[in-house]
Image (cartoon, rainbow, N blue to C red):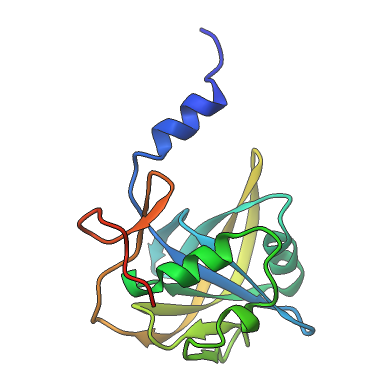
Length: 171
């Protein structure tokens, strides 16, 4: 059987709607952030989650060095924030969040959004190489935000959408 065509593989996965998170890391000098849609709950006892990151990307490099991060589960009102952090060559996370309320995690000292649906303050448990990505297994140390109001932001077919599949609100 011939190998799977990468373009066909990507097109197939674009059909899968996934929740969107913002992963942030503070490296002592600056704040680094990236939009993540490869996120999953791994275990409730102990609390573990996993995120997929580009193996050659700066966020994966900084997370491996620092060992802590914050994850914010984004609401549909965060479509602009998600787009900013998904862009290549983005500036410091603080500059991208000038109009969004945020605070620092007690464990990670990383940025978490105060108006997210939830935020997790995490410690890196391990990194697993996975092709052109890495899977970062994160131990959840704190849940500083649990905002049960709002609709989730989803990524579907390369766009940020709300739960109805329409373009997500802009905030």
